[in-house]
Image (cartoon, rainbow, N blue to C red; front, side, top):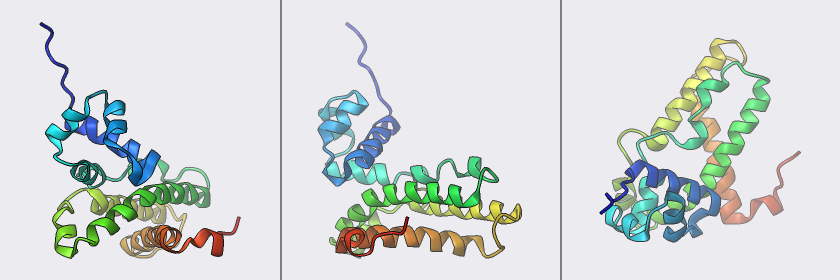
Length: 178
């Protein structure tokens, strides 16, 4: 008899992240299972609910995908172009994360905070973003300021953009300039 194939939790979480980014909150566990090459039963053995799976995928102890490669961007090309590409990645990420966070906060702040990792996830992402800005400042490509404040401001602007888009259909009322 053949030995059963094993899959790491991280491989399942990678598939869940990719599926969430592609389909948003309407993503199904069947889509995640197909992408990971496992059965839905395997998903539910490791993650008791769809919510548990998606929470683990979005708040894992690794940085969010949109900031994972920032160190390779330092000093490359035009800073404004780099920032635009980073912003596009952040907006795509927040289009998945904001509704997820809103759903959890609707259960109350204690429930929402219970699922935020002590390290990694959004906190790790913010630190990577601050490091990126700090390196760009060191190279003189942008003015010197507190890099954490700059990172929080930038990330907060992306979060706000997506929140306005979701809650108030902002793109049709306040389109972004070209």
